[in-house]
Image (tube, rainbow, N blue to C red; front, side, top):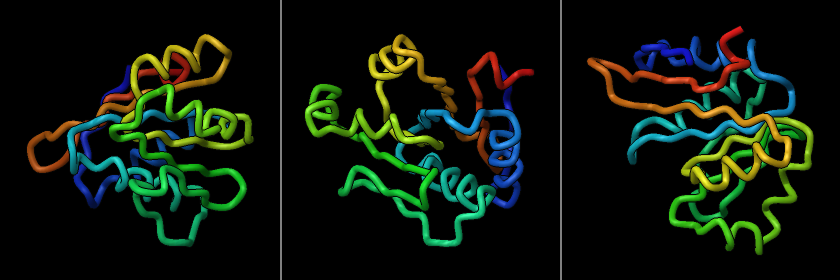
Length: 141
C-alpha cells in the first residue's frame, strides 16, 4: 500500500506514479465520496498517457473511450448484474487501462479471480488536498 498526499496542482504526480508502476493492461478502481476527485484523477492519468481530448465523467453513458487503450467507466448506482447483462464486462478484454469509478468490492474480487490485474485507489480529503491510498502489492515495487 502506498499513500500520496497531493493538492489539485500536484495531482499529476499521482497519475505519473500510477503510470510508472502499473502494467499496460490494468483495471483501476477509483473510490471516494461524491466530488472526491475520481474524474479529476482520471483526467490527470489521461494527460500522462498523452490523451488530448476532453475527459469527462461517463455518468450517463457508463463508458467513455479515449483512444485505443484508455477506457473510463462510471458504475454509480449500477448493479453488478446489470453491468454484466449490458456486455460491459467484455470491454475488459480490450488491451489498455480501464478506470472504474464506483466499482463494487464484489466486482473487484470477481475480476481478480478471473486473472485481471486490479488496483484500488481510495481518495479522501486531507488538509488542503487529497490523500490517495493505492492498494496493490505490485504497485509497491
